[in-house]
Image (cartoon, rainbow, N blue to C red):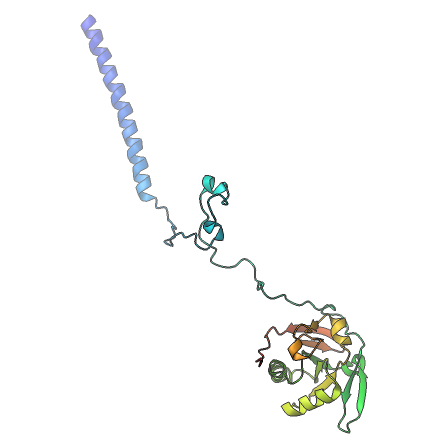
Length: 245
């Protein structure tokens, strides 16, 4: 009797072990098969990590931050700069926003009879598409290129191109004649720099003593219709002068 009981117990023990082992094996096989069917894309960069770009890496050990010991050195530099503004250039901002009227400032020019004439911006712009070209110095190479470029691009879509500079009327007309500007280009004098001050485009060049000039205007191209500002662009090309000692 005891022998038969032992045989029954042994039989149930074998069945339990077999079922558990078979279920575990089936689950493991199903999971392994599902894993084999599932593919996980790996996007591992092949670029080697370098810390030479970080100046903190060149410091003495005593000057380095204790965080490096905890988190390790910095990774590679970013591929693209976050800022879209050039670090060495300050983008000018016009004092009068687009959509506002130009100030009614009086400018002057020299007519064909060598007579000095004055005109206001309101009378100049009334019912017209006028492009104002502000320059720093008449006869300078960069300003000459800038005026010619604006003339070629804006002459068709405008009624008048007014070149404005903090120069006298005689210099402005002589400069226009030397460039043989077209009929649509008017050489106008902002002798006291009033227009450049109101627009917020004054440029102090008094530090360049060898040039012999003081406060002038930035180079800009301002489009207007009926005296209302529609667009403005600035030129950031630097003057390249040759100094002879």
